[in-house]
Length: 155
Ligand code: FES
Image 1 (cartoon, helix red, strand yellow):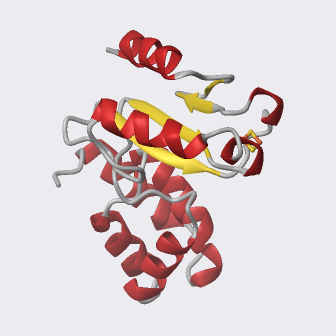
Image 2 (cartoon, helix red, strand yellow):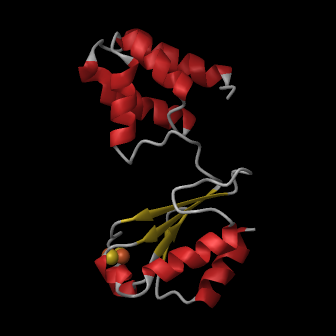
């Protein structure tokens, strides 16, 4: 992937003045994700080099925390709650329905970067189960027709 030069420069500038060592890693990763929207492999290499820590350590932390993304998110970020309240109200069916509609599986981003689909554990709106979040907005008490309508509004 070709990273934008201005983003790479912004990360370099940050890392040039950052503390070295593993203690600075979390901050560097958060900064990287705020710059790129995810943490590309090239950025992981740069972080390892600049902070003077093994690439494997950087990669291990990136993949351990689900907050960190290694792939760019789609323009429409869809999260399906699969917490207990949503689970008992057919969250799995909601997830399968959305997968069919947008043509990707949970955890994937569509190749055209139009959609990302992920599951999450309880987003604090259990009374509205089943719940999904689209680009930060919560939608609850969903039927397939309502989901279909929401997806059509995104196109
Ligand atoms: S379990 Fe889905 S919002 Fe709480």
